[in-house]
Image (cartoon, rainbow, N blue to C red; front, side, top):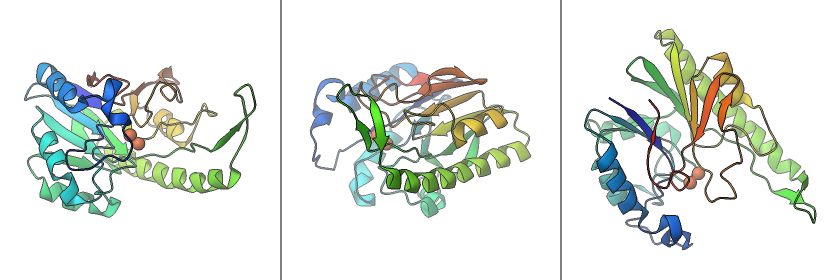
Length: 246
Ligand SMILES: [Fe+2]
Ligand SMILES: [Fe+2]
């Protein structure tokens, strides 16, 4: 049995894309590349965690074919929430689990077991600017009002992560892997509410997605940091090959 993770499939079988970035380079036929990689790597006893931004669909009918594609991938599939998942209001998590019972698991502000490990997931959040740059490309300031708004969202998401961590701890789990959609820190930070929780609860790994394109890949922490291993698992970063987590 193995555990795999990847994020940001951004499927669009039924959605007309406004931007055409998804038709070029690493994104060209990415659904096909990803499906082939999954079929090569993942067996029926394995688990695949998809870390948000599953579909461009605005509502359920627009996501139908995208969900069918995900259901047809090998292994047990766990979906966590991304900022583009318009079909997934946080209050609808239970309904989604009922609708896809036996096929997909939707995980938000909670945990699911993988062997003796608790996979704890929430969307997360981080301040992404706008940042103001000087002529040499150095950051000289940022939109402070937007930063204030972001702080509230970070607090709310940290609370949701805490709820999941507490549940896992109460149920006796000692091994923790945290799954966020947003990176745990922004480009100016080394610590955040999320890195503090990872340390406090002794998370062995923290996985995140959301950062697309080479200019964004190194926005946050990668590798070992205060006892936790941090990994970016966005699909284009992994070139559509799911990362083997365990
Ligand atoms: Fe994304
Ligand atoms: Fe995202």
